[in-house]
Length: 154
Length: 306
Image (cartoon, rainbow over all chains, first blue to last red; front, side, top):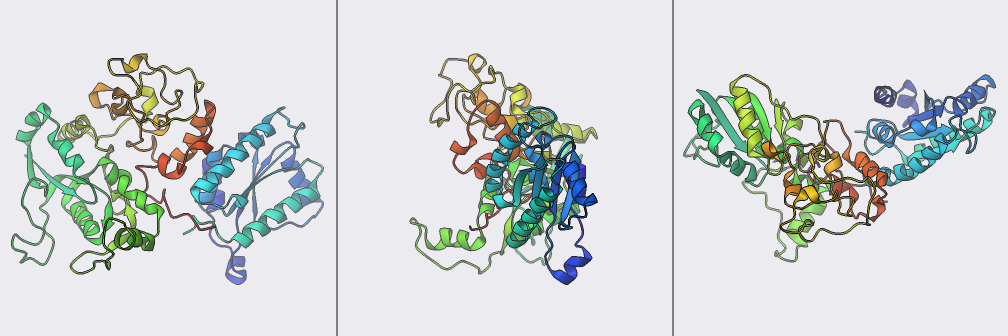
């Protein structure tokens, strides 16, 4: 898992970047059951969202250990978005509640690492909310673009 | 005869004391060792005894020991020279391995450090930053392995003489030295109940009352004393196993550094605290507290002003 995160976070600057300036990389963890299907729906419905999003499919938003988020942000990603099922809809009953509890401590850790907490977000996206996924993705990309590159990017 | 060169960089000298503190095993080692360079013990100048030389002379040696991190250009030069002249280079002590206490300075930008030391300190008269005949400071404190390649690490502040002895003995027999990836908790004799009994307190004196044994004590963290044991590499007890600070009735301060090289003590410590029901928010200055000895490798860095 760490290797996947590293590979997605450490990407050479895109061609786009040379012409348009800073393009953030936002690592997105989507749970297999709701959010990933939501992202898929956004795709098949041809709803536009920024290409800065790098989606990693995971079985549940509750399996995103704070280590993965910190790793991503300190090794090259500019933002991290975690998407899971709405509360009450979790395929594993309470995985997303765990994600919510973790999000709280992740924000605290980001503060200690000197990373703006706005670079991280946790959002619920159901399988039928393609448009919502596109909206959530656009929001975080724009927010991170405004913040600039991650302070850990040398 | 195996030649040994020893150098101290940005550090206090405690790790050299540790070499002398090896005790009786040192007597068995000494006939096989020849110390060819060791500023703490021998008068051997870098540029000839009267300063007539133009190039730094460190004699060639089979084993090199470097203690202390790199804070200025002279130390960088010495570290590079040591690497060139020594076949096996050992980083001795937490400063050499991960920056140590001096690396706490990595939390501040240079200008703030100069301001605090030379201009606004209450105990010193304000004066210009000295530059004449002094090597310039590096931009931050580096661990030695950020400057040159290191073959073996002996962490600790100071380290345990047992490890120095076993590393030297091992090298004489051609065996590499490394510490097992275990945490201080794995070797701690206190009793764990996995639930905090109190909120955070400050350890102002030994927590275990004199005369009582640590074996009968409950886990210090569960008693409400911040202990870095869960995220710190075991081994400080040396051959005696029981961690040194715990033996003295005090919580672990984390001088042996992270358990694995790529571990993230900040994150793991948060997990360890919340798993027994303590609130990390009540700890002031978390990043420096959790990384007191591991500030190099960019672990501690100036926080962006917001």
